[in-house]
Amino acid sequence: MSENQYHQVLADLGEPVKELRSHIPEVWRGFAELHRAALADGAVPGAMKELVAVAIAVARECDGCIASHTRGAVRKGATPEQMAEVLGVTVLMLGGPGTVYGPRAWQSFMEFYGVMHPETAS
Image (cartoon, rainbow, N blue to C red; front, side, top):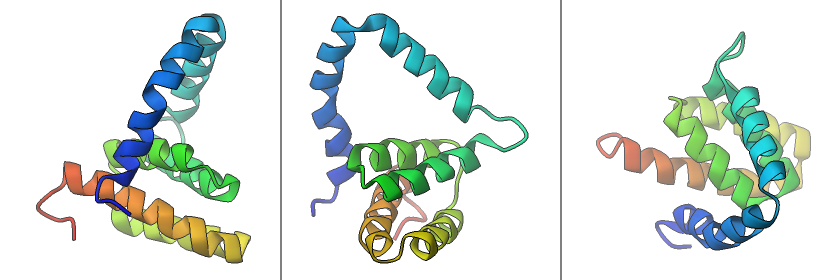
């Protein structure tokens, strides 16, 4: 696994997303608005909502979703300790698949965390 694997996952999706979006712009705009509204701060902070999205991405075994929502969690201020605890619950609820995709989510989170917090990332 490369050091910037999850950055690359998002980069690899860039052109196909752009192409599909050009064919269904209204659908994409609607999804983008739903995304923004669902993950906005409210009674539950946006960072926690991103962590929930990571847990669901792990359950769905979606590397693109894992990359997108771990990046979002880092951007919204989630900590490694919070990510680890959420992944612990994910492993509890998923069993074996959680022990495969949970570490992928951890790796992705730490990759993005290390970029934003180079002084504290290990």
